[in-house]
Structures are given as C-alpha cells and as structure tokens.
Length: 355
Image (cartoon, rainbow, N blue to C red; front, top):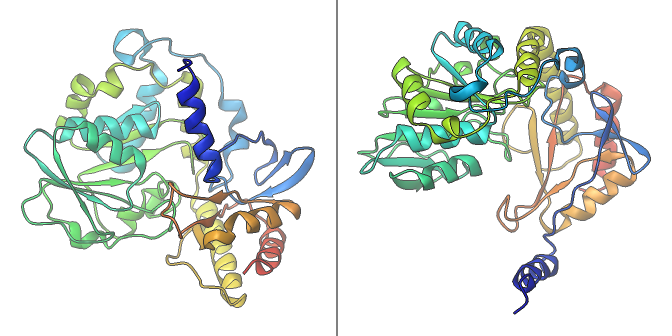
C-alpha cells in the first residue's frame, strides 16, 4: 500500500459522511464584522464576548519567549499577569499558553493512580483528554448529575460551550476537589467577571480560565491553592515541556483584564436579552440557559440554515458531529457586547426563515 493511501481512505470516509472541515480566512473589519470571500459579514460565532480583541492591538508588543518558562522563557509580563489574577481571585494563579495546556496539566497532575474522578458528560475535549492521560479512573456522569459517592474530584464547566447552560454548582460543593473550567464565563459573568461559579456564590477548589475569549487576547490560567501551583510548576508536563506564553499575548491579556468592565458585561447581558427574547417571538424553541451562548438545534437542517444566513452576510458556521451528538447539530450563536441592536434584529429576521 502506498505510504499515504490509508490517509486518503480516511479522508474519503470523512467526505462521504459530510464531515469535512475547512478553514475560511476571515479578515476582521470591526469587533463583530469581517470580510469573507470579498463580502462583509456580521460575525455571530466569535468568542470575543466583550468585543475587546481589536482594541488590544497596541498591547501586542514584545517577543516570543523562546523556551519553557522554567528554562529561559519566564518574563515579567507573566508575573504581572499572575499578580493581577491573584488580586481578582484571592488565590494563587499560574499562566499557560492555552486552555488545552492548562486542562492537561491540571487533570494529569491533580489526580493520581487509584483516584476516582467524576467528569460531566458534556465536558470539553481538553478536559476529556486530560483525564484520559491521567492515571485516575474516570466516571462519566450524566450532565448535571451530583457527585457519585467516593470520588476524589468532580470536573465540570462553568458555562457549557455548546448548550450555553450553567450547572447548579452548589450541589457539587463538598466533593474533595471541585474543578470548574470557566473558559466561556470568565470576564463575562459573576462579580468582577470571575465566572459562573462566583455568580452562584461558589468558590471552586480549582478554576481554569482563558484570556482568548472575553479578554480578547490569548493564553490561559489556573487558580488554586498554593500547593497546586507549586506542584503544577514541578510536575505539570504541559507547563514544563512547552514554550511559555508569548510576551505580547501576556501584555494583551493584562490590558484585556483592565478593559473588561462592568459596563461591558451589562451591555453583553442586554444584547443576550434582546436576542433570546427575539428568538422566543419567532416561535422557535428557546435554548436553555440565560447567557451569551445560544445553541439553536436544527439537526440535519443545520448546514442549510448556515448557508442561508451566510447568503445574507451573517456568519454562523454549523456545529456538527462529533462536536455534538448526531441529531443535535446546531447553529451556535455567540453574542458580544459589541453587537448592535440592528445586527441582532437583522440576524433574527434571517434566522426566522430557517425555523
């Protein structure tokens, strides 16, 4: 068999199932607009929830770190960012190059051989992969279920990235370790933008957040007890064996945290209310939740609906299997504080033709 024949066969299988993914270059022209294939579109799929990404251009100064932070890549910008996080969360912080790196480090370091760990059925791929790489025995529990007896920890998300719902975290308090990935909530929800946990008056044992969504930059962080920070620094493989967060990204994250104000969070909440209310008036099934991720499940009509929206210059790619289960294909709308009422209303008008 020729060397690449099996790769071709696998690609053909993906093509037959209609699951081929492709990159489409977007050239941003504003916080919620972009040029795609020569036409301007309104973007309703970005995780730039507060519309800060383009405002951070002046902060992208400095250079790449060139090495792991433990070798030659530690910078003052990393420590300034960790100090700002520690002031916000009143607990030690450690900065990572990405949310994937952060979750791999937490799951493989916190949990040991012989531990039983509960993982919510709808957890993100980075959590799943991290737990698979750990030595722990993982018990996948029904979405929103309480912690099984005898587990050493329970891993959930603060705001789920596909359904946009929050769990009742109070009923999980008391687990030996409550680990909450707040990637889609940090900056947007809770007092000071601390996340869905704090919105529910719950302080998780470990919190994972990102700078690449509401804060408009790149990178991620872990909040936890002092012992965990020291352990991650010495044993977290995805921290030790990767190049540190680039200095420009760290400086942009610092600025993003400064710009993420209560006023922007309230504007985001107002845009969410407008969109969800309009969706209800269209007669469609209003998705669960109350926050800025709104998944409109259309099943096998999803890609046709995405094309209809794009024909009217509204960019919302369809979400398909295996990201969501078969039959749960959807349009995932991400609201931003930067969306205008006119953009929201026009999006709802076109969406109404698809429901």
